[in-house]
Image 1 (cartoon, rainbow, N blue to C red):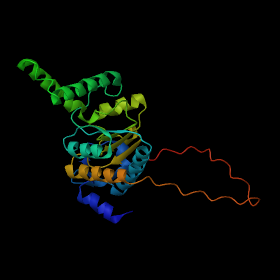
Image 2 (cartoon, helix red, strand yellow; image 1 turned 90 degrees about the horizontal axis):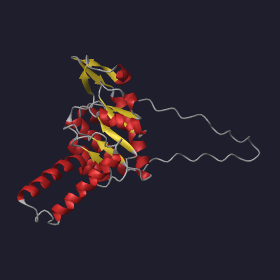
Image 3 (tube, one colour; image 1 turned 135 degrees about the horizontal axis):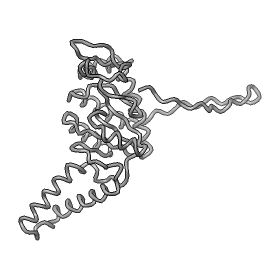
Image 4 (cartoon, rainbow, N blue to C red; image 1 turned 90 degrees about the vertical axis):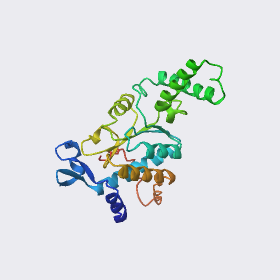
Length: 254
């Protein structure tokens, strides 16, 4: 395990969980211990899970898949909006609109309205309106901007979600589950990591912690996914052909 990585995580407060009387037993294997009534997260497992999530996101990115970052917590908004913008993915950082995934046909229409309002505002389309009408249009644009600013180019439901605090963003987790969209999430000690495909146990209440994770994910997106080493070619007449491995890969432990 990279000692520098663990030290950086510690310095950025990733190890600080919630109060020990406010926890989910499903997180037990990720908890190192407790001090002063606060659970301490096992950073070796945080590092392992972070690397696994980055690896899977790299593969999605390399194959042209789109990820929706959901980070409406105030502590996470700026870092994850910048992460999504810099990597060419989508984001929601102000509010989760109910039905954003499960009723995307309607949401797509709202996004189209939002884009038209932006165009009208930029091209002087509001100037021919009365003062009252213009104010109403500007108010509508402001509301839609909060909901859809990070979704301007989203033409269909995303291929995966990355969620900052699966408890706080419970609605997005449920909608993704309904549609079978894979989710990656950061969970504190009160979460249930088995609600998503892969989870990262970490402090979800600290700006430092979330900034660190956003930076790590951004750097991960820049790197190319690791390629598996090519299998050695069996020499003819020296051994029987290997049987095809039909064992299904088990899901990585959360």
